[in-house]
Length: 462
Image (cartoon, rainbow, N blue to C red; front, side, top):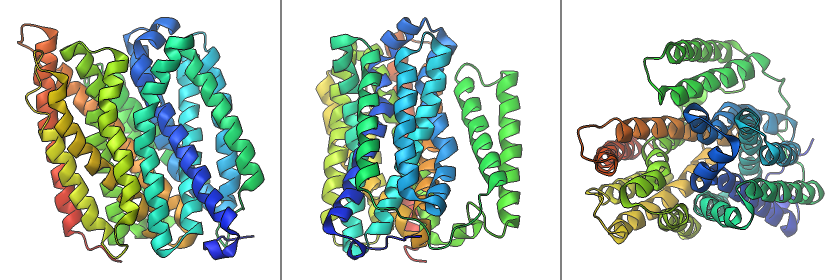
């Protein structure tokens, strides 16, 4: 078995590949994650989707991502990060083809769930490869580049999907994803060096099953809750999620070699990694994911125009994360994460006052501030994900971090959707959406500020 510990363990080309391929995979995964934001109306029309199905068109990939991330991260550490990475790329190609030819909502939603699981393999194994390959200042540089791909993917996904939609319809994006995934799988299979923990652990089947099904039940409840939180199926799913996740904790506490060592939660940096990712999903991604819809209803902007305006936030997130690698490695990641969350909150609060008669350019300063904060936060979370766990568990650390992020994002989207659409007493839908959006901005900014206080108080050492 081979454990790749530093660039010195292989050639300079090996190190470049261990950064370039995970970065490219993360870019593709995040573009695919956000692509439906720009084409939801056309996709729903093409699949003859009703209101319930439309919610699943957007939310299904989050279910696959969050349910699989921790499991595939653990599998990558034990059975080979390259192997899991290549299998993830191949699975993304197959599931994207299923979405491209889907005759109706059921097949499309199933394809998006599998896309989420495939993306989880690429994200967890890819960041694990980076953590196992680079150390010290080189690791800070590499995780900064990886974090930049998160912002760039969010920026380019809706724009690319909308552009391809104009050329050949909404299905063309998924064929493009097939091509990108196949290329990624072939290049990774030929160029990446295998990397795994020095000592392979047995597969934690009870942990994988209880964790994956518990997260799936939780996110299914959150998704259905957007249609009404008093529905009996929502309550049943929440109870099932509580039982399964409780069972997961009991299973992991009793196993000699668990998938997730619960003792890591006593390590301040690991706790900061998971909590920071949860806050990012809940207070930042949740709000920004709803911005295109708010722009469409409140300001009457088209899908492509709304995507370009949101790209101010996500594009600057890319730039800020890429430049974060220039910060001295001695600066504590926790303090930088706290600063990032404060910047996000300030930028979001600058968006307050949204109204139907407002001009789009009034949102630019807030999107600029929030974009810089988001990029710095993405870079620090990537750094914490691999530095807060033992080197041989780098993919598991990535899986835990990103599981928290996408659970938070799903909860955040549900929270913002409930606030924005749950306000009444206004003369028009545009005014109601604007009022709800302003309330959601305050709530999400408060969440980000609470996360900043937590990050500032937690010791940035183990």
